[in-house]
Image (cartoon, rainbow over all chains, first blue to last red):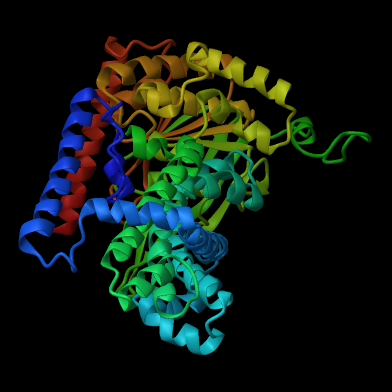
Length: 273
Length: 283
């Protein structure tokens, strides 16, 4: 029963086979301490302290921002945009992906559009989105949904295509009709791919929202980072970046504990073959 | 003959009630299959195949790879249409797959539903037919017991060995109580030991359930061991039925017995003669 989490193809995926052992805790802590020491030494002796603040200063700034409530507001703004945009994007991506994979018409109609959009990163789309939708909230929702939808759609369609044809045939000769095959065979067969797509899309949603907030927002983590740049408050820049990583890691953990766990039943082929 | 008793429910029960007088359950009438290659040239896999399968008969389709025996089985199942000719079950044309003919595939990994337990896999067809849960459970348990897997009902497919997965698939195919069981080289991917055990089991299950079985193989020994009748296909392309052999040996058959071995040898000779012909034809 070897666990192959590498198949989930996400760099941030923690290797699940390795339990948290004291040895591992020690090595990881050592790594963190080494980074902090190196950072402090760089700050003290090598780099201009203005460009690289001490890690302790960064933590202090982080707490000050938390206490003033400013950071909480920014986190709330960014997370709201991600949640709204991401949910819409996933819904569109899953729906269209399932349709595309089953209907030649939908597939052939959408393929050219998808081929054009696929290489366009959220950052590349940002100017257009700002022209079309202005700088209000909808522009941000749109950008995040767009990012998530394309990733989820491609994964969903690939998942349907990857299902062995004999599974569908087996269901058909057991008496399942077209609708039942869709619901009870194709959809569950595709769930691992959908979950993989959704998890990748979550990471990309963070990238999209920060890009949008850097350029056009009055709040949010991206705004916080950009503002600190204007004021050359590098400690605040670092605080913003740290918040981003923490939020990204946290949302991935939440994702793993909820959706991935629920979907595990459908991922036997990934986890257990 | 086709008039139904008033009050008979449509669906599975009615289909069972209308039992035609004919002894043939499946009729293959002048069936051929052509594929169009990329260059646009039509290649015939086999042509003008006619075959009647009697109710309760155990028929083996035996032939070398590429002779189209699996394609024929897929057409009997209704998975793909014949290029020419017709296939009938109880005198009505087979146009699409349905639960009167269920297929047991060689690739259990692809064919079983990996997210369902052995029990739930066997229940699948019954669930699709809308059978209530309690009844489903008892029917599925009965078939799992028949294939000797009652102890593993709650196991997931990945927890089962290849032979056990194939048993689940057989139970699943039987659970919907089809007229005909179609088997596409079901034991081809198993080790010799499991294959031997499952052949014996299948013979027993067949005798217990009285199902019609159409079984595809390229293994002569398997054919001789299991068949009432062996339909021997020649080499493709444009393969034909070259011989139909009635096997009238007592059951249960012992693969090492003299009669079984002798018949297998005869068919082997037949095979090599045809392979030789095919080579000469090609030269």
